[in-house]
Length: 288
Length: 159
Image (cartoon, rainbow over all chains, first blue to last red; front, top):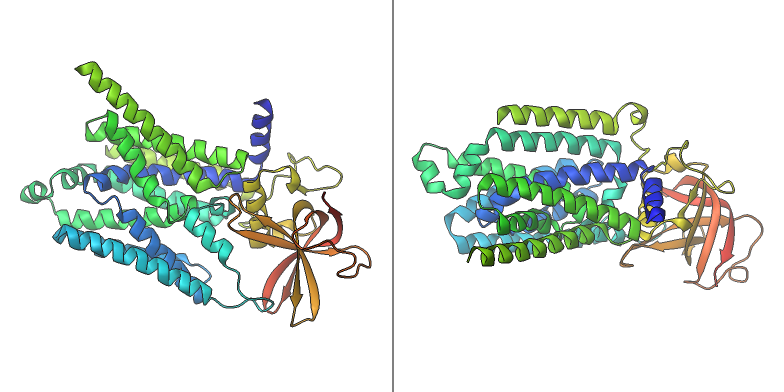
């Protein structure tokens, strides 16, 4: 155990590890805040669709050789989020179909474009490492630059501020959109706001757990919290705590034991979900 | 609630200053450089990747490729699988130590140039053989791309 702690202390000397922890915790905080809203609005799968769109946008940026690929990824993902959430409001089947269509379409085109990326002169292009890291989040969180960290801190501050400033409105839109509309709340505007915020979170979370595993980061903490807590506020608080705990544990375990970062974090989320499910079952039996 | 938001925003600003502030603001590319005061180099090695977990090895190699300036001139020791490429353009052989990621689905490598007169294939192991390489980190431009390599390298073939 002491050996592990010494090793961890040694790894913490690397700025890359410290950056990963900071960004990981910020992404977990943001994703868990919005996760509850998404689960309750039955948009759990939108994270997957948007992350695939972000992957496709990243491929376009790579092919076009754009230095700062965020300039392409962010607007494309935000526009897709707005379109998906708006379509989802009309009919549920169309919404599901739209998410599925955009999700697989963007993934396929993204991978195709990555293979058409410029050759590196000496050999044929080898982008498999980038693709793997982007899809499964194997190590990309451990290769962040200081600029990435600052961007993430600023964007997270904006996401948290937006959530707290519009907390009551988001609460109203989440539970009963028709009632919210009837009481004069501009639900379309708040849905648009939620869509934009989700897109921002997705783009940053892609570095953390990979685009195939982002949904887990959004839905598991919320679902675990919902097993035990009933009020909107308590579910959000619990969801944030679970998300931060799983992210930090998963990240440290991955660094120490050499497991893939993204899947280790998701495994921690799954374990917590089962623990909370058991607690919920025990509590219900106690009530009877 | 607005007060909470304000406090949280302040907290984030403070966190950003602490995490990315003073000591490290001079260079954005120092992502993966361990602070020299705390890193204890063994036998003149600045980065001993043979003692790290597979996730750390893979990410450190990634950082070396992404931010080569940080590692310029540093002594690096790493274990990987021997690989050789024939550069058609320059008509030369390029030798590399390949490192897989945690799930071995992706791999990347660092080129090395042995110190001394070695001939391929006689003086080199078979492809895929595990090797330990020790050499000075260097980056260079060719065909309009940046490549990294370990110069004056020593190679040990692992059993």
